[in-house]
Amino acid sequence: MIVRIVRMTFKEEKTAEFLEIFRNSKARIRAFEGCQHVELLQDLHQPNVYSTYSLWDSEDHLNRYRGSELFGQVWPATKTLFADKPQAWSLQQVEA
Image (cartoon, rainbow, N blue to C red; front, side, top):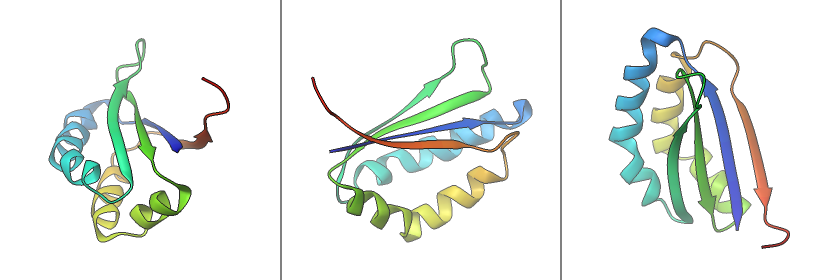
């Protein structure tokens, strides 16, 4: 299982646009082969900073999503709204 966290800082006036993109695509992302979970989190003190938290069966599944037509639609539209470079981490559980 792969945990993927992507932290994104948006232009304050563009956060509503991002939320619309996320709401319109989250079900399709969740339905993508190998995706077990995806959720959106908002920074407690910086309301224009959001993170996605997703669980993938494997790195291969994540990479297939990242090479998909869906990602090719969602990511370019999202990138135009950034105020800063996004940060991403792929992690695996060591101990529960």
